[in-house]
Image (cartoon, rainbow, N blue to C red; front, side):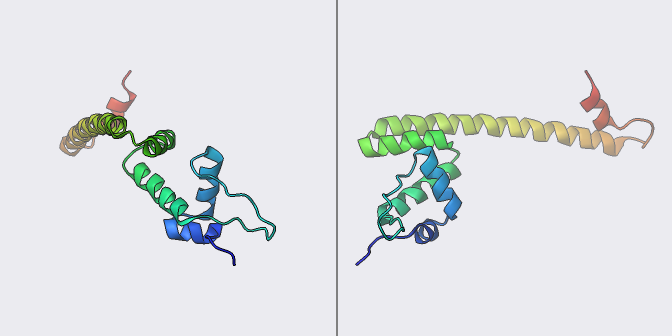
Length: 132
């Protein structure tokens, strides 16, 4: 009797599409099982779990390269190293949030200048963007 998941069932179980599974295999994030005589590779439920891990890590802002590192740390049970990666990722996110807040503030000011203008010659937003 054949056991395991086909690539379609694996993708469905992990909430991704088949091309995502193939892409992760090409990147080395997911092992590709050998192709048996019947022509259908079979994947384990553990591989579905691994796919969900990859997608969750991406959702937290980790790049696929970083996810590869996390997968290696997972198998080595290196919690301190994993924690350090998470701390660095959080700091990067906080920096990006600060950058986004500054961009929001600048755009708000430009919109206010535009709203206060008389609709005359030049648009203040265009002037600021075109300034050297």
